[in-house]
Amino acid sequence: MKAAKFGLFLLVASLAGCKTTSVVVNDSSGAAVAGAEVFLEGKPQGSTNAAGQFVGFNELSSGNQLFARRLVYEHPSYRPDHGPGSGWVMRVYQTSRIVNNDGSVTDLTVADPTATQTLTVSPNNALIGWHLVVSLDWDASEDEFDKLRTRFKEASNYLYNLTDGQFFIEQVDIADDAQLWGSAEIAFQVDTWVWPHTTYPGGFLARAGATGAHIYMSPFSEVDSGSTKPTTIVHELGHLAMGLADEYVGFNAFAQNYCTEARLNGPLGDFKSGGRRAACAMDKPSKSSKLCSAHPDSAHRGGTLQPGPCWNTVAAGYADPGPGSQFGVGVIFRDRWIIRTPDMRGAVVGTLPDLPEGLRPKFNKSNKTYPNLCQPFTFVDQASGAGATVWVRPSFWGRDFTVGKLDKNSTLIVHGAHLGDMIVTPRIIMMVDITMCTVTQ
View 1: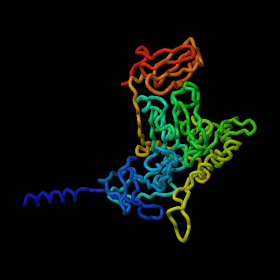
View 2: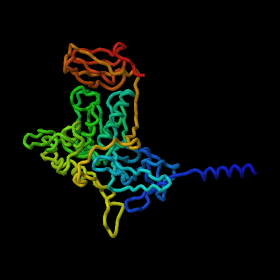
View 3: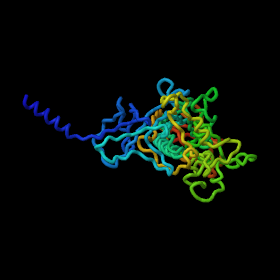
View 4: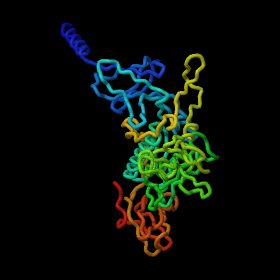
């Protein structure tokens, strides 16, 4: 009995000596927020209790960085395969992260670890996450899945900077062998000559047409289409998810259509093509870091394709549909989130840091495997010549599918073929054998 009491005494003494740092999450009115996620050094740690407290920390260190986010809205998807029930296509969070006009992001820095750390989530610090379903029309290797995962991570960083820290890709469900094809926002085709395009602008939050709308592109493009660039994914989502039109210079001969005067004719600097504040991603995303706005430093020039500043279209399309959940004195309405445009801020925002680890896209993968998948190999057909179409005839499933066209050297890198499949061109039919195929492990 004495030994048990002595052990209990040691446990109590140990707990008494364990120091902790208290964290509280409030909203902008000062009310406690239950269920808010707390992040330490960019990594999720858990959620607040009913009193808005997070009690999972040992004592933090001076200089630690904290932020919080609170889910305030989830938009259902009209497409299948987006989760239980109707699934979701967009989530909106209030966060405590402040995006400054120079592009820096302010989180709470712990000064005194013994003090209560108070994080305030606000409609002015909105973060909108997209849920994408992606389908591949070939039998993909693990390496190809990994490369696409990296591409979407880079695309999300680009989107985050493009939208001044207000949009990111939150989740990507990706499947090969045409699984989820009808449900997908993005359909990747192995045919290297598929030009990236969207079948309907704005077909994301609501149904567009009888069969919906999709982005089509090839991840292995041999032509200068931009298909292999993460920025092109965001450009196409600008159409499908944001309802934006192209702003290609000279696209409309009668309207002098282009995004901003500063990008085309301005002096060298931040707003010129390739600059850190250059617009517009709906022209050349690889040379543009921002969307055009009504702000005079980088104002939309006009034209018949995109009728006004891209930011105006985004702000209208992603406004809180209401009714809001918060009210002030009397019936003063407060939005659950506010899309902050450059003209609202009074500045075109500088370059943001990449998303922290806890906000990088989450991936769910479905890799349906068939036996004897070959690593990509170079196919040569001098008889058919440059520009000839190349097909694969699978030995055990489906029908012929196009893998691309021969380049100027009459060669093509073939993806998705298996040992025993047939390669078909206008002049040649030949079996994929061990001289061509190194089977993936």
